[in-house]
Image (cartoon, protein in one colour):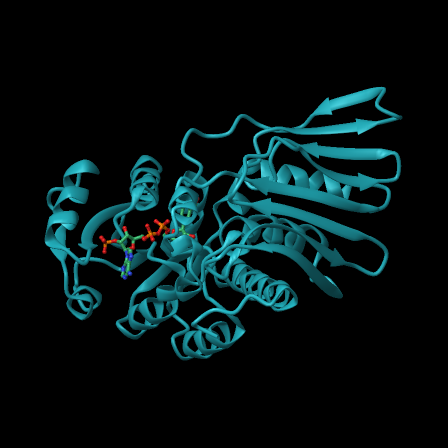
Length: 330
Ligand SMILES: NC(=O)c1ccc[n+]([C@@H]2O[C@H](COP(=O)([O-])OP(=O)(O)OC[C@H]3O[C@@H](n4cnc5c(N)ncnc54)[C@H](OP(=O)(O)O)[C@@H]3O)[C@@H](O)[C@H]2O)c1
């Protein structure tokens, strides 16, 4: 197993550490937190008492106990932390959205070219899962593509704080938050992976008093069809997602967490169930893939993912610009 250090001690880091252990990919050997108390609590909760705790970021980065760092801090901190990690000789797995804007992404690409033996992955978990590839295959078999409607909306427990007049990180422009960055990123990943980079984009956002988007609808325009994206963090949605191709429609239960994939054809006469049962922990596939790419030094797949990450970053930025959403990081 490869060695892992973590930044951020919220539940998502715990889920990744569990996935890494369950898949035999990474073992937790170092924990960075702003407080020793939280670092130690995390180690106890996630069964890694032997890992070393750090509260000094530079000391953590230069520690010899780990080769790869998983970064799950607020979005605006990703760039500086990933930069420090690359400069310290580590591989990086950074949570989505990897970076706040194309300026940060370009600076990271330059740095990575200077460190060709290290890897930086954006943890867009769903693109590594079996059902994502099943949808891709079903799209490849469509006679034509006539567009898609992709949806992912989930009420955030932290929206209560916004309603109370507060500004939690995930809804703050100071931390590069908002619905597009947090959940929209999944459907942007879907669209760019399945249909490529759009010619133009437009985002009708519903803005919150904090200055970021709570929910909204985006249009990605391709030469012969449009893709509609629906995403938000202020409501729960039970809409399915659909990809249209002539008289065939691929129906997905949730475009951000793909559990069910069905193909309707011949005017609904013929319905085929294509999806596989999802694993209980949705981060297992990505943990396995990242560890395998590092172990095999699979630079081909790595560079494809990095290119995809760059394209998604560009589309997110264009969407944000079209809605007038500005981050402190800009
Ligand atoms: N892949 C997924 O399914 C998924 C799900 C949820 C979140 N995420 C991603 O994970 C990342 C973290 O999200 P989150 O909701 O967990 O964020 P968060 O609660 O705001 O912060 C995560 C951690 O970062 C540290 N932190 C918080 N505020 C900070 C500050 N002002 N300065 C420095 N460190 C700070 C805290 O760790 P310490 O107190 O220990 O320092 C905290 O536990 C985001 O990029 C998000 O998009 C991914």
